[in-house]
Length: 262
Image (tube, rainbow, N blue to C red; front, side, top):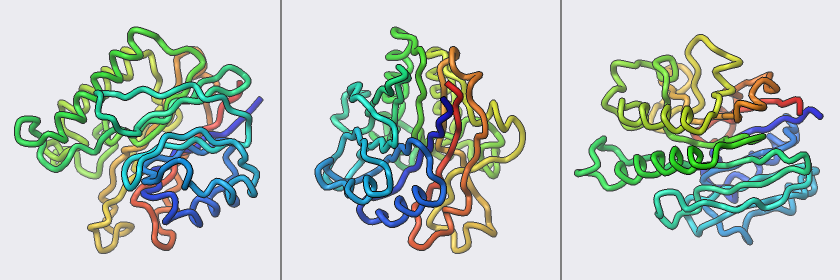
């Protein structure tokens, strides 16, 4: 069976319900993982998504903050959630397909503006979250699993518009990059996007602060698709839908896609 999965930080699922519906109509992924839903689960507008052929949803929510949801054409079973770093935030949810594939939808904290855990509590929380992610999957190595989400770290030099300029900017500092790489490697995950697109600048996020994000193109690849080693070879057709960043009242993130033959 071939299925396509997409991940998108939607920055309020209720505010941007129409954009989610447009993506589902135009691109028709089999599974769409959303982050930063900013909604309790019972207020996520699932009826409109179901009407488009996505009757299945597994989610964790909070009022006004965080929140993760998995929408699917395919039947899903709730596979739980982990409170990474003990923050009490809705930042992870897992679901299992009938084929036995487990999908982890993760929203790593952004980490604030100052890359110093002593001066900035949020940065410390981010580092602790990534360390817990590493330890969680190291002790239970994933099999037949896909991890997607806004990981809020651009790990490679060509995942940002200017490597040297961003070395002291949260999301590309060496301590964050090292932590994310450790989490990926210790868990035996494969970066599917970069396996498919190994070379060249690649971004999934452009700041709202830029008066012309497209022309300036000062982006970062913060959104990721990983797969456990046993199924990573089944992944193909990775892509980032840059044009979605230009839709009316958009999220500052663009959706990232990958397909799997499993």
